[in-house]
Amino acid sequence: MTKTTERFLRYVKVDTMSEEGHDTTPSTAKQYDLARLLTEELKEIGASDVYLDEDLCYVYATVPSNTDKDVAKLALVAHMDTSPAVSDADVKPVITENYQGQDIEMGTDGRVLSPKDYPSLLNYIGQTIICSDGSTLLGSDDKSGVAIIMSLVEYLVEHPEFKHGDIKVAFTPDEEVGMGVSGLDYDRLDADFGYTIDGGQLGDINFECFNAAGAAVHVHGLSIHPGSAKGKMKNATRIAMEFDSLLPKAESPEYTEGYEGFYHLDTFTGDCDGANMAYILRDHSAEILEHRKEVFRAAADYLNTKYGAGTVEVQIRDSYRNMREVIEKHYHLIENACKAFETLGVKPLISPIRGGTDGATMSFNGVPCPNLSAGGHNCHGRYEYVCAESMDKMVEVLLEIVKLYAFM
Image (cartoon, rainbow, N blue to C red; front, side):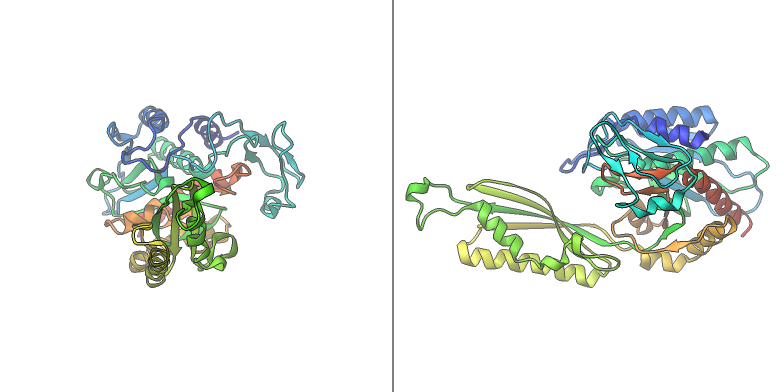
């Protein structure tokens, strides 16, 4: 077992799930547990300028340049939190070495990780598959990225003969709830360009992401005894269901792919007196995202006309933008990533992200930052898995990228 795998297995056992609906960063105090662990490990490895922001839970470090050349300062970024979609408390990794295409028994409750359901498993014949026991997600998103970056830092510190410019490291909280770099100190990071290591299968390169917004819908009902409700009751739950029925059903995540955007009903709570729905709106086109917002507002206007003013309230908040418009001006980031993968015999897989990364916001804040693979599959769910050899290969890929920038 390599050091990268050992690190990964250590990190996934730390509960770092973030939570929606908090005004503080981090959204959960338990994210500090991994932040403090990483801070100590970076110091032990011998990284420089290691710093934990005790107020906001960001970890920073530097591997200083060891060349006299004027070399770009390169940031490598991964997030520490895991998705609130499924718990990451008490992760029990299941390790399958020399995988031969069989179903993997995940635990004792009958869950099976099968190539019948997830054909991508067959890409890893002869390699090591890591999943959870099915009672939790695994946490490969993005503790794979954290482990990969930590191994890179260790290699660079231990091999001073490997020439490179300043390598800047940042581990962030709350990426999964859209606040990953909301408190990032760009002066402390002090990078010219960067990469987030937060993608999927080995070879992934992403420089296009969704334009994103969140929408909160609150329905004000009127509760009254059902026996005397005729002409008086306004059932908030039914009105909320009617609101959702006004949105185009074919434009939901379960019916879309590639560049197709969507409306996604994430949570729904309510009763006769009041109901609340939380949506996410996504599109690679900024213009179409604005149209989606108008569809939302039109649905609310229609129901307010039907049931009375103020019955439905909608609040829409922008989250992040498509980083393509920034990255295209610094396309060397994509070219060098492609060269690095190809040098190591890995086919580059350039594709749009059907989501977002910390790098999207960073790109619009002066640090162009596309996304690279971390090796995971089926993220945000109980059937998440990662190939150990993919993580090891990504350490080599990052070394190639660092080398390319040192000799540009």
